[in-house]
Length: 198
Image (tube, rainbow, N blue to C red; front, side, top):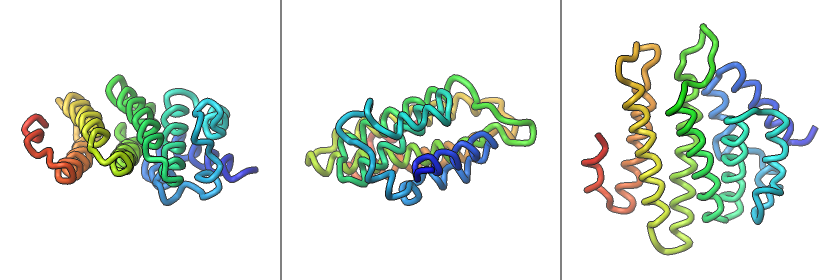
């Protein structure tokens, strides 16, 4: 079994058991195996071996979220900030849709917000890839786009938070989303936009 298939098999085990913390550990940039980072074809997402392999292990929306996220990490590792940001953006949009439209499936003994560590990992990749893309282009267009996308996550958390019991609360999710927004604000001097975070 290749490194990619071992990695995806472990990831599937954690997601199917609703273990968001362990899934986040595997998805974090430092824990994506080096063979995967080197093996991704940056030029065409359709030929990407990560997407082909993800189809064997996951159904939608997780298949797209994981494939785009891992491909983004690999492109970031190869110094391809622009593609890394586009792929991270796609992963984040699919994660946002999952979070906004419905709560991901869970068993009765697992908190319904078990997936929040995965959301944090996806948002972290968006922010880092946006910075890397802007560093190459000497601007801050991608970080502004990342700010707007991450702000949408805050809106989704706020809407779901109304009338929630403590077990279903998304307050921790809102905390890390705000944290990422401020990191972007301080980096590119967007503090005037923080008045719109309500």
